[in-house]
Length: 257
Image (tube, rainbow, N blue to C red; front, side, top):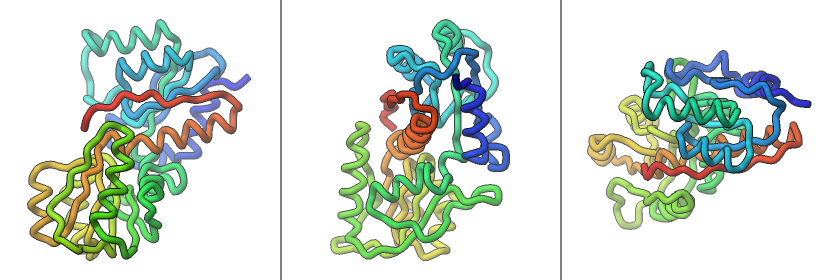
């Protein structure tokens, strides 16, 4: 029988968890253990009470997430934090979390899979972070508004309404960049402008990013933090399900962002 430790060790190797830098509180890997053999897998974007309850309802005993248990940093195990941990204990559900390793993976990553959803073909890396690249970029020739419609069709599945910076009538996208989640950071915008990218697809960004983009002839498509980061956890869960011959299901718990 397959142990959850075995699945976690395999996932760490697959995603290169140890070698890929990340936000310190990401704590990628197995975050909460269970000694029971692997029974079934649930996947969710965020570790939350809704996600745990969803996994419990599916009788899953491994929950794969993109944003893990310690995202907000150290906090007392009281209130909501205590309820989440108690629910994991009582339900005997293990938690495996993967953030940047699951953003940048060449086949299971959020960005390469989002590009596929939008009918784009990546040809280079994009969005440098601490010596690695998180996102992808490429070239195409498509009406920018048509690309927005593709993004809207995708995001609508997860309850998100896509927003964009102003788009001139007849504008076409020829060089694009993509960085899921909070992808419209200052360094990412600068990298896009310096690289001659005309359209940037991200999950979300601060208000000021729209002004910076417009003044540099860059259209930003804000496709939703939650929506753009559903793909990696589902791909990883599918891969593990196939490898270990156990069922898996996605737990929908959209944040509205």
